[in-house]
Amino acid sequence: MPRISRDRIKQVVDEVRALDPPADAFWQIVEERLGLDSGDVFHFIAEDPVFYGFAEDEELPPKKT
Image (cartoon, rainbow, N blue to C red; front, side, top):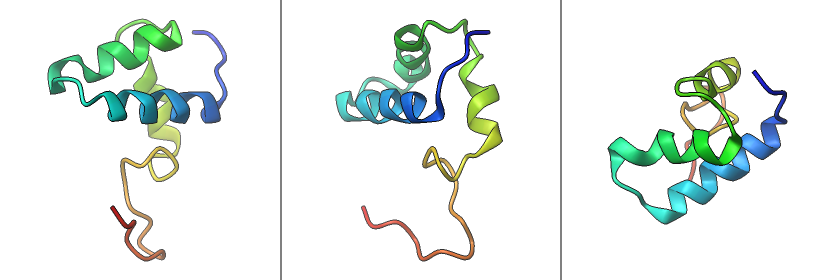
């Protein structure tokens, strides 16, 4: 698996979110842009889901949307 900075992953996730693709294509697009195989991005996100915006830190106020 290639080494990719967490900032780069977050950037790509945010870019793909902005595109508002169909739900079934979201992760495929993210992994394609990062040059990852299917399912590989989840290893990175699992390390810090709060950073990537996929979980809330219970000690912080909720994110404003």
